Length: 164
Image 1 (spheres, one colour):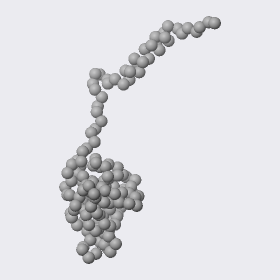
Image 2 (cartoon, rainbow, N blue to C red):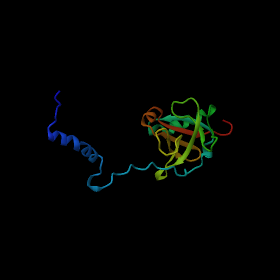
Image 3 (cartoon, rainbow, N blue to C red):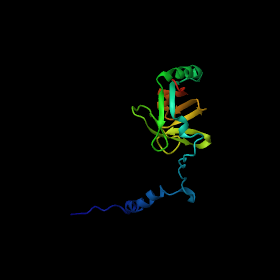
Image 4 (cartoon, helix red, strand yellow):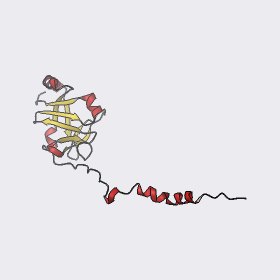
């Protein structure tokens, strides 16, 4: 039986193939590859989670021009308020998008003085809401996830009085 022999140039090419493949993963010009951007760590929020605990009228809008009207509508919902409770580990009990049961969410600060409310430790995660504004009486939240934000809009919470 006759064995097949490959020409010498092809044998050399196969021998050098692992070296060539390894060169594809080496940094060019002796420079090291850039490191991925670090995930921002949560900073202290500009207000404690405790300030959110209570009864709130809730409504939402998609156009900034509708904010004033929506705030009035939210105030009218104090007859059946949305309740934000204390979480067992210092957060707040709220619903995430498309969930029936509330869960504990963290209030966390982020870069640029922004605040977020969400389940994950890092600020600005896809399941977070950005605190657009909060003055103790009116809370505006916008979902980070564009698809969820498109469905729910900007959420406006108006603190209900003690007899609402």
